[in-house]
Length: 326
Length: 284
Image (cartoon, each protein chain N blue to C red):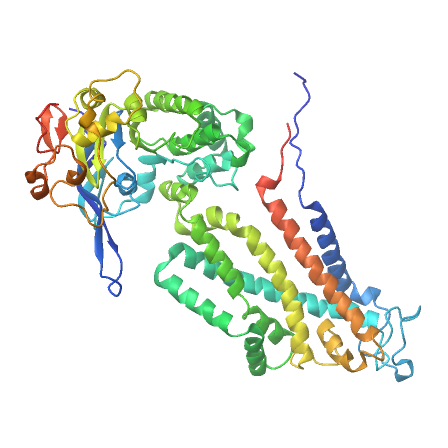
């Protein structure tokens, strides 16, 4: 058994919202008891609607938000509410590719500076070595050496995302969190960037967490998929298992939402649609958080929250009716 | 494919305002530095009541004042005081304002509350009144003038800096820098400051003009530069009684202030444009 690179152990990140004077303090449970692991070289797809806690989870893994309770083990570090991470050590272990390639690059820095500064900060003193690593990294993401002295506004969206990827990989991390890496790009560019990420994964022996609200993107790249709903993981498993045999009605709804000219089994189920909008995380429904939108809702669902339990080896689902095959 | 070496060609936008503004400011600074060389007479000692209030002529290009001193020479020497007050006090204001605004916006919390409160306090009291109070304590003179003006109008740069930081703080590249292990100070200086510099430079050059005018106001009220030493403001204040009989007494110091302030403002606009990498167009 390979030792996991990242382990989340009952991780929760709560925020206090409001003030004592105006309406009282409420707790927003952005991430509420997530247990997850990522092995070296693996790609985990993390899927869920906007506001389900994906980004908060990412920030916690990056060490930018401290867990309210639970623990994160990443590389050799253990992060919990009272043990903040060593930021420099974290930087060499986990990096991030951002969604918006226009806002994620400093408009006043050339590509060279964007890539060389982190190297110098992390103790690469030799000028020639910095230069060669920068040029090498640029070549890996498909940029030419003469691009080094240009500013971000001189590049297209796809090229900017390549720079973003180069910046994430320059310190040779082992885990890269890709936060919707292609959703801000032209459809024609998306495949290029996805393929680049996959090539680099093999070349540099990386593990990915691919965050997306679109199962369609995740499908192509992930070894395993975790589906998140209102701060909790509702289903996780190998991507084939999830796509061919989804057990949680929310997963079914997400799969049904993929534009699908080939009419896969799960997508053709008429009842797979989720009704309405995601409820407020400030005031989640009792029992199973999905119950107001669920086609399978029963009395039990409003009383008792289902736990994440196995339905097949490596395939977990949090639904009282996980064994009911539609 | 041609084998010609590709040279990046940078075209400067806003070139006109940069060159006109820079030219005006450079002229004023050169005049101040070269004052002993280019002045025709001593601005203080060469009083001669026989020559009082002569209109501009070949001998006295800007005319003479009520004591018979050459206005041109006094303006050239006055540039030393007006410019140093304007530039030094605004540099103080900018340093104080940007430091407070940058840290307040970036760190937030109680520090932000404190700085915002202080800024509002400074904005609520007219800065000239504040400067008057400081001058009353320190007494008139060049040094106290610079101190009084340099401590009283940082609130504008502070406000602008803080607001800009707040709007930048959530940008991806600031987060990326944190993830790469950058410390707070490094992020402020390498990621935030270069991106908020444009508006701050405009505010600073506006403030220099403002400080020159404030010096004029304080000198006018008798709290700035004491007679007989010339500053543009004190020259204006002395000329007010003769504005109908000898208008050149007030017109020429007024024009000196006007062109210097105009030059500073144009220079600020031009600098903002060339500091923005997006305004340089590369043609390969």
